[in-house]
Length: 198
Image (cartoon, rainbow, N blue to C red; front, side, top):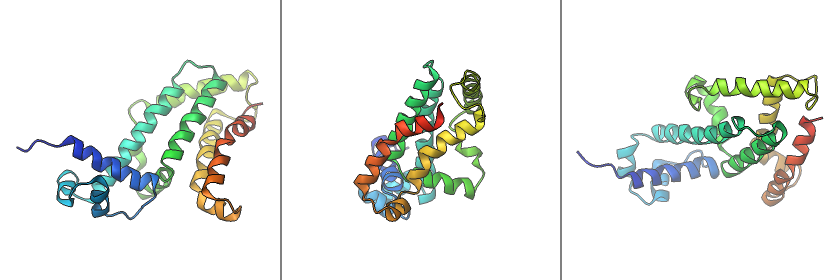
């Protein structure tokens, strides 16, 4: 039985992830990905029989990687305000590196059952624990009394992801180049914190 060349397999996955999630090449073919990875298509097909299998593999891995990073923030013993600052930093870094991943996530959510998108067992428990912290922040007057843990958390994700998802439209509407838009994203942290906290 042939020994798998895990180095080649990883190069293929890394190239696919870059093309799909960083560059937004939604229709990249297996040949495009093989060329970018520096391997022949036969080898790519050995590891991943179809483009769909490759896409699903790198998508799940990318979501798991992000889930691990975000979970480490949510589970940290950091004070609540600093925890949200950490979350914004981690989420911004991830979405800047992989701006098209959110678009793929939306597509997958609408295409099929979302259960396979979970980043691991116990993930819902992590959010239940986080909700307790949010409620404590509401009760302590740190957050607006009119919000709920669920709405606070959805708002937190939304105000981080939506501008990146809508970047092409916003750049056109506001006549911004890529550098100007990226610079604006960097300045949003203070504004987001100001919106969420009293």
